[in-house]
Amino acid sequence: MMIMRSEDTLEDIELDLLIEAIWRRYQYDFRDYSRTSVLRRLQRAQAHFGHANLSGLLDQILHEPECLPELIGFLTIQVSDMFRDPDYFRAIREKVVPHLRTWPSIKVWIAGCANGEEFYSLAILFREEGLEDRTLFYCTDINTAALARAKAGIFEIDRLPGFSRNYREAGGKGSLSDYYTANYGVARFDPTLRSRVVFADHNLASDAVFSEVHFVSSRNVLIYFDRALQDRALGLFARSLPPGGFLGLGTKETVLFSPERENFADFAPDEKVWRRRSHSSQEAAYAE
Image (cartoon, rainbow, N blue to C red; front, side, top):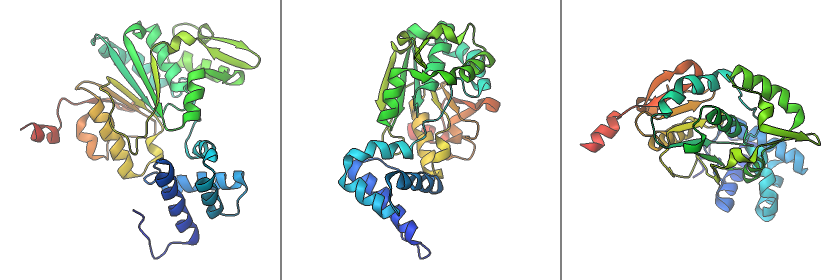
């Protein structure tokens, strides 16, 4: 439900109507995303589609559904790097993996996988640590075009020097070039890295928990949500993880100011990794 404010500008009203229309027409829910971030992205879409205002974009998106995938591309962030923030991946390798080894099978959820950089980073790491054969990865995003790119595993060759540098700093045990072939200006990553992955459309704003997993990696996603949606996403992660499971977030993200904080214990806080507690007070009260 839209809440009208007395100080609303015409652009505020247009923004509310456009966000509501995307939800009601296509069931993509951006209502609890950071308003400033959504406005900025929709203004870029408005310029791209050649409209003078958001009302023009609203009319087009209501009557030309074929434009929706391109609009979703503006509303979601697909920019990342392989082994981005190498200290995070080093912490996964050195601190988290020894605990994951204790499970006979492992499920990993990469929530907001974008074009797949995070997935290929973890798939390589798990292969090098001997966990690949007993790990199932779930890679989810709301952007179906990004999911298709992740499935393809193809990246521009000029991005590889940065990827390789991150890989080395993250504790890589070989050469990143062992995992791809390069030709015609692109790098194609080894298709066997995708032998144990499920790519799926999942919306943290409206969808439910779909499986128990042992490790959730959702980095640089929560920063685009408002506080209520951050809490919802953290709740999904908490309910997905068994006691002792792990949650990894982005460098500017935290569980500390959420009601879900009680579900997580510090594990490697400097690298933004938390561990699922055995029981929260809410769960204990429910169990009684």
